[in-house]
Image (tube, rainbow, N blue to C red; front, side, top):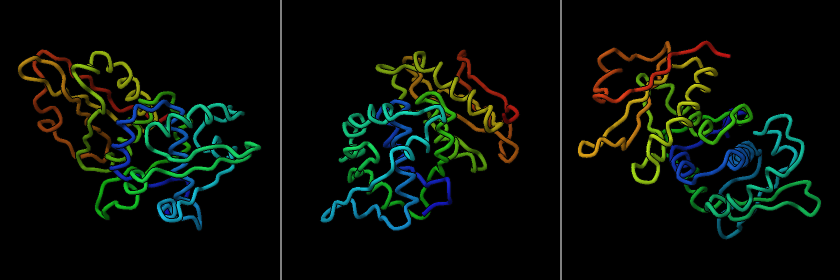
Length: 243
């Protein structure tokens, strides 16, 4: 079990979520389910697998209070995500009780394995579910997850997920990710340097690295600004005072 009001999300699960193209509300609900499973004093996630295939139960109001803004006063956002989370292969069972008082859910085998098979030295993101109520887009949540996973490194680097020159070019994705970086910079006081990796033959951006800077990082100028793409602007967000 992780520290109260946080839960440990293994790198394997982080990557899995990034490839599911989930909405903001679906991300909020899924992370709330993970948090309550992690914090339950007696329920073991392994009991969701065969042969018992147990489901967990959570009060509906606790689910929305965990990761949604305080102004959320109904269950429609949760109900709207149930089919999406099942279609994404993250949960096998997810439904309300007859009175809507609580929800019943069971994670998919892939999710369970990603959580239980984590190596002791494996990377992870220590998630604060309450933070998701302050974020206003799916990109914000995914960027936040990578930030908390990597910010403790001496020279923290991560890659923006989902960049593809043919189907999701950086020119179309840029605004949402720069917006996410601005939001997290205000929250954490970090600086973020976006470093495009360019296809030599076509000059298309094939991957986008993000370097995090804050007072505890040990970047030196030659490493921080190494090989900025010629004739291609590399966005840099200076560290901002925490909100």
